[in-house]
Length: 71
Image 1 (cartoon, rainbow, N blue to C red):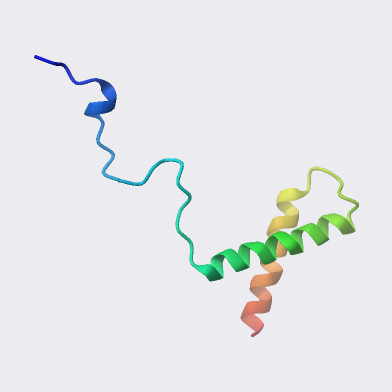
Image 2: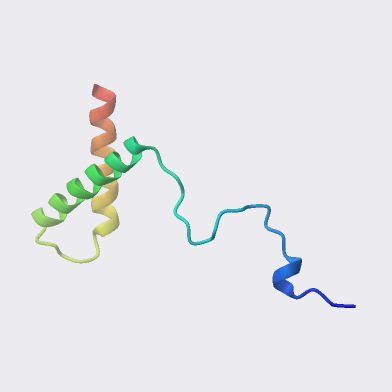
């Protein structure tokens, strides 16, 4: 009798590959692109000093969300 190997015995319940990117709506891709562009300009204003990448991203995202809320 054959003993199943670990790969055969593990059931994940998902048919998606671990390397596949999650599906996003087109507006999400546009928003992410706008955040990236705004974060770039924030970094540029600081002279691209390292160590502030996350702060730039979060600041850009917050500003764009505030703009959306204002209409």
